[in-house]
Amino acid sequence: MNKLEFWYEFASPYSYFSMMRIETLAAAANVEVHYQPFLLGPLFKEFGWETSPFKIYAEKGENFFRDIEREAEFYGLPSIKILDEFPQPGLAAARVALVGMKEGWGVEFSKAIYKRQFQDGLETKNKENVLEVLKALNIENAETVLEKANGDDNKSHLREIMEVAKKKKIYGAPSFIVGDELFWGNDRLERAISYCK
Amino acid sequence: MNKLEFWYEFASPYSYFSMMRIETLAAAANVEVHYQPFLLGPLFKEFGWETSPFKIYAEKGENFFRDIEREAEFYGLPSIKILDEFPQPGLAAARVALVGMKEGWGVEFSKAIYKRQFQDGLETKNKENVLEVLKALNIENAETVLEKANGDDNKSHLREIMEVAKKKKIYGAPSFIVGDELFWGNDRLERAISYCK
Image 1 (cartoon, each protein chain N blue to C red):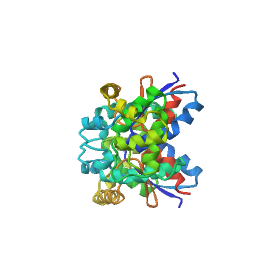
Image 2: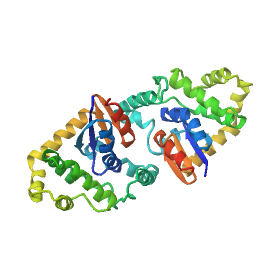
Image 3: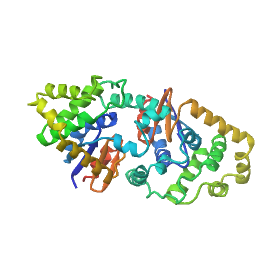
Image 4: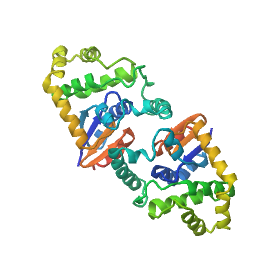
């Protein structure tokens, strides 16, 4: 078993950490990564949460922000920026990332979205933000990509992915899947990779 | 800063992992550990949770049990036993542990409670269970210890500790405190220790 599914949500700082770490770790262990953007919102709604649990529980939330500051430092990443509107809706970016995965620039795009949000402190929630990222990456026909991303085919593709997420009993992000094993959280990335051996 | 507070709950498998790991890690880093047993129940009640969040959210719960199995294996601990009644109420053990901290056998007792519950799969929730552990450790005057543990002074001592927990904004277990920094979760033990330098 040397395949690992990496399920990530653009709103999630811990998904961002995993995105910044997974390439090197997976390569060192000769593990192939399947990058799977998805949305946490619909899953959280099933738990009765209308937003991130970090916003619902005050103490948890306060320490969460401190934790991601410390974790960014620990990983040698730039100091983390959190926008006033947190979590940033990840739908626009997720739709485009799906197109990118088919066209070969999905990972690069995903990293650029995360950097824009968590390193540069810029919005990533709407189509205009996403278009800027596509253009900065010199992705050809950025406008056409955006149309494709918001076309019916791609929308229903994302809905199917959400059904798969539920079937796989994913309940948070990032999540890693190795065979039948589900691992939750950036803290489990190394464990998941070691399960691929 | 080379002092670390370790807040742990007897019902918590992740607190158990930290208890089994902290001595070696702290000694290697020349860090002094203040062992602080406490209760999660009263804090969870303030969040509107009547039991562990792992029991409230089904997917989370299912994967939680798999995660602690994998973590036990990862740490080289015996395969983890989870009693039908999970979480086991930690009040009886916490009261005795407080007495033990004053009398010098609190850490040894805490480890023994965790081993009984998570390695041997035996109940630890009531006074009789706790008495057995005291006797197995050859603690002198075990019955007197139990009386002291359930005396008014000790009960109000535990209530004061819970007030301190709230003041320190603890919201889960294990928690680690270094100066003003709060770290939540067994996954943060190494980070907390590195903050002591």
